[in-house]
Length: 351
Image (cartoon, rainbow, N blue to C red; front, side, top):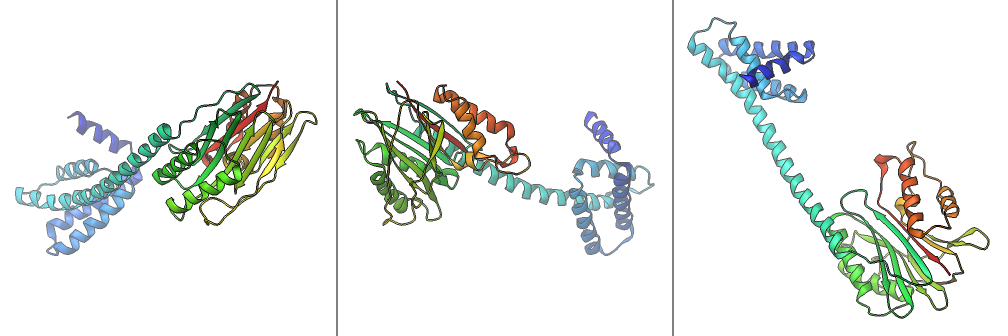
């Protein structure tokens, strides 16, 4: 009884013209069922009625209530009353077809969600990276996925010989394939066993990606090697966003202009390399395009100089604090509907 009372209240709360329109249409179908001999035409009308009802988000329970209320106003013999149930049956059956279609879609979405969850767990377990500790450099990094699975990746490797390899990458692709591609890249970096120049590292990783990753999936990467003894940065790029060096002495930013083709296009690709001296209090800054191509609520690109000025303002802080400040500043002005994966890496030379 509570359910029936609820449904009647629900129907009564609908906009009157809409409810009355459907009531009239349904009553006309019931009347026709009492007189017509053309059942095929009646069934077709019932199907058309159901299509309209579903579009307006009415439920099968609503139709049942309309049917009961209307039948109670008619003086019908038992056989005629049972005959009107043909109309109700056809209409509710239409809901059944719709529900099965809906259920199939739900099942597909559930499978998709399970795949995304699996890809997310793969990333969390296989791509976990520890932040190395050095006497003369500080490291700050933040990597935040826009969805459950990130297309961004970073890696930091202490070779225990006074050098550190690092990489920031963006996989053009999503889901399990992207997570597996990043896992292969991490394995390729970690398995080498000792430091290698970035140009050689990208050449090796390019072969891995080209051989093992879907032909429609590409990877951009900034690959660096920091040498602590001489405070030199060696770097190469595979189609990645340009990095920056903040010079503490001049308080200016220098763009790292090394360029190269994205990973996975051709095995024959070779990569240029740049050698950059890093002085005391200098910063090395690497972004992914989720940072440099972030848009504000009006749809305009967030001014990159605005972000660089923030780094200049907070240059005295630990790099981990700086990357957090930049990330929070982007969140405040970013259009939430246009979010992308974001990764920010800052390396600071200290005394």
